[in-house]
Length: 300
Image (cartoon, rainbow, N blue to C red; front, side, top):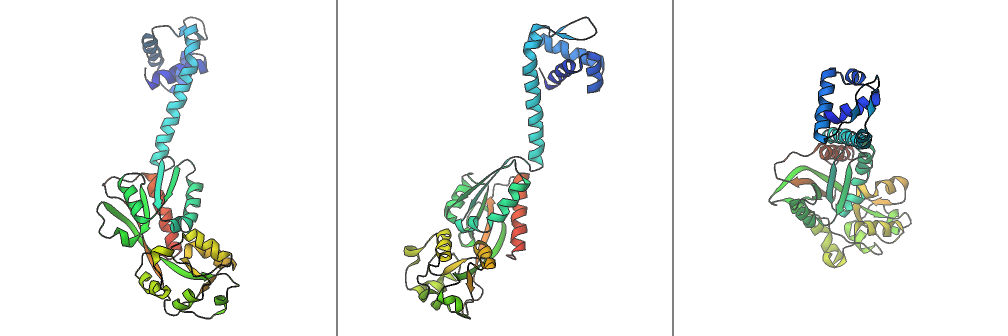
Protein backbone atom coordinates (compact mmCIF):
# COMPACT_ATOMS: atom_id res chain seq x y z
CA UNK A 1 0.00 0.00 0.00
CA UNK A 2 1.16 3.54 -0.62
CA UNK A 3 0.60 6.93 0.95
CA UNK A 4 -2.03 8.03 -1.58
CA UNK A 5 -4.17 4.97 -0.88
CA UNK A 6 -4.17 5.70 2.85
CA UNK A 7 -4.89 9.40 2.32
CA UNK A 8 -7.76 8.51 -0.02
CA UNK A 9 -9.24 6.00 2.43
CA UNK A 10 -9.14 8.53 5.28
CA UNK A 11 -10.64 11.26 3.07
CA UNK A 12 -13.58 9.07 2.01
CA UNK A 13 -14.39 8.30 5.65
CA UNK A 14 -14.01 11.95 6.65
CA UNK A 15 -16.07 13.35 3.75
CA UNK A 16 -18.68 10.59 3.75
CA UNK A 17 -18.54 9.74 0.03
CA UNK A 18 -16.22 8.87 -2.83
CA UNK A 19 -17.36 11.91 -4.84
CA UNK A 20 -16.70 14.43 -2.05
CA UNK A 21 -13.29 12.86 -1.39
CA UNK A 22 -12.50 13.25 -5.11
CA UNK A 23 -13.35 16.98 -4.90
CA UNK A 24 -11.25 17.51 -1.76
CA UNK A 25 -8.25 15.63 -3.16
CA UNK A 26 -8.73 17.20 -6.61
CA UNK A 27 -8.63 13.91 -8.51
CA UNK A 28 -11.20 12.02 -10.55
CA UNK A 29 -13.72 9.71 -8.93
CA UNK A 30 -12.29 6.90 -11.05
CA UNK A 31 -8.86 7.51 -9.48
CA UNK A 32 -10.44 7.39 -6.01
CA UNK A 33 -12.16 4.08 -6.78
CA UNK A 34 -8.97 2.66 -8.27
CA UNK A 35 -6.92 3.50 -5.18
CA UNK A 36 -9.45 1.91 -2.82
CA UNK A 37 -9.77 -1.22 -4.97
CA UNK A 38 -5.98 -1.61 -4.95
CA UNK A 39 -5.89 -1.13 -1.17
CA UNK A 40 -8.64 -3.70 -0.63
CA UNK A 41 -6.83 -6.20 -2.84
CA UNK A 42 -3.66 -5.73 -0.82
CA UNK A 43 -5.51 -6.14 2.49
CA UNK A 44 -7.57 -9.04 1.14
CA UNK A 45 -10.88 -7.68 2.39
CA UNK A 46 -13.47 -5.00 1.51
CA UNK A 47 -13.23 -1.77 3.50
CA UNK A 48 -16.61 -0.26 2.47
CA UNK A 49 -20.12 -1.61 2.09
CA UNK A 50 -21.14 -0.61 -1.45
CA UNK A 51 -24.55 0.91 -2.06
CA UNK A 52 -26.38 3.77 -0.41
CA UNK A 53 -25.76 7.49 -0.63
CA UNK A 54 -23.27 7.58 2.25
CA UNK A 55 -20.36 5.18 2.58
CA UNK A 56 -20.35 2.68 5.39
CA UNK A 57 -17.27 0.93 6.69
CA UNK A 58 -17.12 -2.84 6.97
CA UNK A 59 -15.89 -4.35 10.22
CA UNK A 60 -12.44 -4.61 8.61
CA UNK A 61 -12.67 -0.96 7.57
CA UNK A 62 -13.56 0.11 11.11
CA UNK A 63 -10.59 -1.85 12.43
CA UNK A 64 -8.21 -0.46 9.82
CA UNK A 65 -9.29 3.20 10.15
CA UNK A 66 -7.31 4.24 13.29
CA UNK A 67 -4.16 2.66 11.87
CA UNK A 68 -4.62 4.41 8.55
CA UNK A 69 -5.13 7.77 10.30
CA UNK A 70 -2.05 7.19 12.45
CA UNK A 71 0.01 6.31 9.37
CA UNK A 72 -1.18 9.42 7.51
CA UNK A 73 -0.35 11.59 10.53
CA UNK A 74 3.12 10.06 10.88
CA UNK A 75 3.82 10.54 7.16
CA UNK A 76 2.70 14.18 7.39
CA UNK A 77 4.90 14.66 10.46
CA UNK A 78 7.83 13.07 8.63
CA UNK A 79 7.34 15.33 5.62
CA UNK A 80 7.21 18.36 7.91
CA UNK A 81 10.36 17.22 9.72
CA UNK A 82 12.19 16.70 6.42
CA UNK A 83 11.16 20.17 5.28
CA UNK A 84 12.17 21.59 8.65
CA UNK A 85 15.58 19.92 8.43
CA UNK A 86 16.09 21.48 5.02
CA UNK A 87 15.21 24.86 6.53
CA UNK A 88 17.37 24.27 9.63
CA UNK A 89 14.42 23.87 12.02
CA UNK A 90 15.03 20.20 12.79
CA UNK A 91 18.06 18.01 13.16
CA UNK A 92 20.99 17.81 15.55
CA UNK A 93 23.93 20.12 16.26
CA UNK A 94 26.87 18.78 18.29
CA UNK A 95 29.66 21.09 19.41
CA UNK A 96 32.89 20.54 21.29
CA UNK A 97 34.16 23.64 23.06
CA UNK A 98 36.94 24.61 25.45
CA UNK A 99 35.41 25.20 28.89
CA UNK A 100 36.08 28.93 28.98
CA UNK A 101 34.40 29.36 25.57
CA UNK A 102 31.28 27.48 26.63
CA UNK A 103 31.06 29.55 29.83
CA UNK A 104 31.50 32.86 27.98
CA UNK A 105 31.19 33.27 24.21
CA UNK A 106 28.70 30.42 23.72
CA UNK A 107 26.17 31.65 26.30
CA UNK A 108 24.47 34.34 24.14
CA UNK A 109 24.89 32.22 20.98
CA UNK A 110 23.17 29.18 22.48
CA UNK A 111 20.42 31.37 23.98
CA UNK A 112 19.64 32.89 20.57
CA UNK A 113 19.85 29.54 18.81
CA UNK A 114 17.47 27.90 21.27
CA UNK A 115 14.98 30.71 20.71
CA UNK A 116 15.12 30.46 16.91
CA UNK A 117 15.58 26.67 16.58
CA UNK A 118 13.52 25.13 19.40
CA UNK A 119 13.16 21.74 17.67
CA UNK A 120 16.87 21.22 16.95
CA UNK A 121 18.68 18.91 19.37
CA UNK A 122 21.68 20.92 20.54
CA UNK A 123 24.54 19.27 22.43
CA UNK A 124 27.67 21.02 23.77
CA UNK A 125 30.57 18.93 25.05
CA UNK A 126 33.47 20.57 26.87
CA UNK A 127 37.12 19.60 27.22
CA UNK A 128 40.65 20.54 26.27
CA UNK A 129 41.45 21.24 22.62
CA UNK A 130 43.25 17.91 21.89
CA UNK A 131 40.23 16.00 23.23
CA UNK A 132 37.83 18.05 21.11
CA UNK A 133 39.93 17.48 17.97
CA UNK A 134 39.83 13.72 18.61
CA UNK A 135 36.05 13.80 19.04
CA UNK A 136 35.79 15.80 15.82
CA UNK A 137 37.77 13.12 13.95
CA UNK A 138 35.65 10.36 15.51
CA UNK A 139 32.39 12.06 14.52
CA UNK A 140 31.28 12.60 18.12
CA UNK A 141 30.97 16.37 17.53
CA UNK A 142 30.27 18.24 14.29
CA UNK A 143 31.92 21.55 15.23
CA UNK A 144 34.86 22.42 17.46
CA UNK A 145 35.64 25.69 19.23
CA UNK A 146 39.28 25.39 20.18
CA UNK A 147 42.51 27.30 20.76
CA UNK A 148 44.38 27.97 17.54
CA UNK A 149 47.81 26.75 18.62
CA UNK A 150 46.67 23.11 18.59
CA UNK A 151 45.01 23.39 15.17
CA UNK A 152 48.10 24.42 13.22
CA UNK A 153 49.36 21.43 11.27
CA UNK A 154 46.55 19.11 12.39
CA UNK A 155 45.51 16.78 9.56
CA UNK A 156 41.83 16.32 8.76
CA UNK A 157 40.62 19.64 10.19
CA UNK A 158 38.89 22.36 8.20
CA UNK A 159 39.01 25.85 9.68
CA UNK A 160 35.71 27.69 9.32
CA UNK A 161 36.76 30.85 11.18
CA UNK A 162 39.53 32.32 13.31
CA UNK A 163 39.09 35.08 15.84
CA UNK A 164 40.86 36.71 18.76
CA UNK A 165 39.33 36.91 22.21
CA UNK A 166 40.59 39.63 24.58
CA UNK A 167 41.76 38.53 28.01
CA UNK A 168 41.58 40.84 31.01
CA UNK A 169 43.10 40.78 34.47
CA UNK A 170 40.23 41.08 36.95
CA UNK A 171 39.73 41.55 40.68
CA UNK A 172 36.78 42.24 42.96
CA UNK A 173 36.04 45.94 43.68
CA UNK A 174 37.39 45.65 47.25
CA UNK A 175 40.71 44.19 46.16
CA UNK A 176 43.74 46.49 46.78
CA UNK A 177 44.76 46.36 43.10
CA UNK A 178 41.36 47.76 42.07
CA UNK A 179 42.48 51.20 43.28
CA UNK A 180 45.57 51.29 41.02
CA UNK A 181 45.56 53.39 37.85
CA UNK A 182 47.81 50.87 36.12
CA UNK A 183 49.59 47.68 37.13
CA UNK A 184 52.21 45.42 35.64
CA UNK A 185 51.85 41.70 35.05
CA UNK A 186 54.27 41.10 37.91
CA UNK A 187 52.12 43.21 40.24
CA UNK A 188 48.99 41.25 39.28
CA UNK A 189 50.80 38.00 40.09
CA UNK A 190 52.56 39.16 43.26
CA UNK A 191 49.65 41.19 44.62
CA UNK A 192 46.87 38.82 43.61
CA UNK A 193 46.40 37.37 47.11
CA UNK A 194 46.32 34.77 45.58
CA UNK A 195 46.99 34.92 41.86
CA UNK A 196 44.97 32.24 40.01
CA UNK A 197 46.88 30.69 37.14
CA UNK A 198 45.70 29.10 33.94
CA UNK A 199 46.97 28.39 30.43
CA UNK A 200 45.64 30.26 27.41
CA UNK A 201 47.70 28.70 24.64
CA UNK A 202 49.01 32.06 23.49
CA UNK A 203 52.49 33.44 22.95
CA UNK A 204 51.80 35.73 25.91
CA UNK A 205 51.67 32.73 28.25
CA UNK A 206 55.45 32.70 28.11
CA UNK A 207 55.51 36.36 29.19
CA UNK A 208 53.26 35.72 32.19
CA UNK A 209 54.54 32.33 33.35
CA UNK A 210 58.08 33.38 34.36
CA UNK A 211 56.62 36.17 36.44
CA UNK A 212 54.82 33.70 38.68
CA UNK A 213 57.93 31.59 39.20
CA UNK A 214 55.79 28.44 39.25
CA UNK A 215 54.88 25.74 36.74
CA UNK A 216 51.64 26.21 34.86
CA UNK A 217 50.84 22.51 34.84
CA UNK A 218 50.90 22.42 38.65
CA UNK A 219 48.62 25.37 39.33
CA UNK A 220 46.07 25.59 36.50
CA UNK A 221 42.48 26.17 37.65
CA UNK A 222 39.27 25.82 35.59
CA UNK A 223 38.15 29.20 34.31
CA UNK A 224 34.68 28.94 35.85
CA UNK A 225 36.26 28.23 39.24
CA UNK A 226 38.65 31.18 38.86
CA UNK A 227 35.70 33.37 37.93
CA UNK A 228 33.71 32.43 41.01
CA UNK A 229 36.69 32.77 43.35
CA UNK A 230 37.52 36.26 42.10
CA UNK A 231 33.86 37.32 42.29
CA UNK A 232 33.94 36.31 45.95
CA UNK A 233 36.92 38.57 46.56
CA UNK A 234 39.57 35.87 46.44
CA UNK A 235 42.56 36.89 44.35
CA UNK A 236 43.20 37.96 40.78
CA UNK A 237 43.60 36.33 37.39
CA UNK A 238 43.25 36.68 33.64
CA UNK A 239 39.86 35.72 32.18
CA UNK A 240 38.15 36.09 28.77
CA UNK A 241 36.16 39.27 28.22
CA UNK A 242 33.18 37.20 27.09
CA UNK A 243 33.15 35.39 30.43
CA UNK A 244 33.25 38.52 32.61
CA UNK A 245 31.62 41.23 30.46
CA UNK A 246 28.36 41.24 32.47
CA UNK A 247 30.27 41.41 35.76
CA UNK A 248 32.42 44.29 34.48
CA UNK A 249 29.35 46.20 33.30
CA UNK A 250 27.60 45.67 36.66
CA UNK A 251 30.69 46.61 38.69
CA UNK A 252 31.01 43.18 40.28
CA UNK A 253 34.53 42.92 38.82
CA UNK A 254 37.19 45.47 37.94
CA UNK A 255 39.43 45.16 34.86
CA UNK A 256 43.02 46.07 35.70
CA UNK A 257 44.87 48.20 33.10
CA UNK A 258 48.11 46.27 32.42
CA UNK A 259 50.89 48.67 31.45
CA UNK A 260 53.31 46.06 30.08
CA UNK A 261 50.72 43.78 28.43
CA UNK A 262 47.91 46.07 27.21
CA UNK A 263 46.49 43.86 24.46
CA UNK A 264 46.47 40.30 25.74
CA UNK A 265 44.41 38.01 23.52
CA UNK A 266 44.06 34.35 22.72
CA UNK A 267 43.42 33.10 19.21
CA UNK A 268 40.52 30.72 18.76
CA UNK A 269 39.29 28.66 15.83
CA UNK A 270 35.95 27.26 14.74
CA UNK A 271 36.70 23.94 13.03
CA UNK A 272 35.03 20.90 11.51
CA UNK A 273 36.20 17.55 10.23
CA UNK A 274 37.55 17.97 6.70
CA UNK A 275 35.52 15.19 5.06
CA UNK A 276 34.21 17.33 2.21
CA UNK A 277 30.55 16.88 3.17
CA UNK A 278 28.08 19.74 3.23
CA UNK A 279 27.03 20.90 6.67
CA UNK A 280 23.28 20.61 7.44
CA UNK A 281 21.32 23.85 7.53
CA UNK A 282 20.82 23.55 11.30
CA UNK A 283 24.62 23.53 11.72
CA UNK A 284 25.28 26.42 9.33
CA UNK A 285 22.62 28.46 11.14
CA UNK A 286 24.54 27.94 14.39
CA UNK A 287 27.79 28.96 12.68
CA UNK A 288 26.13 32.15 11.41
CA UNK A 289 24.94 33.10 14.90
CA UNK A 290 28.38 32.45 16.34
CA UNK A 291 30.04 34.65 13.74
CA UNK A 292 27.48 37.39 14.38
CA UNK A 293 28.36 37.29 18.09
CA UNK A 294 32.12 37.40 17.45
CA UNK A 295 31.56 40.35 15.12
CA UNK A 296 29.47 42.11 17.79
CA UNK A 297 32.27 41.53 20.31
CA UNK A 298 34.84 42.76 17.76
CA UNK A 299 36.77 39.54 17.92
CA UNK A 300 37.80 39.48 14.27
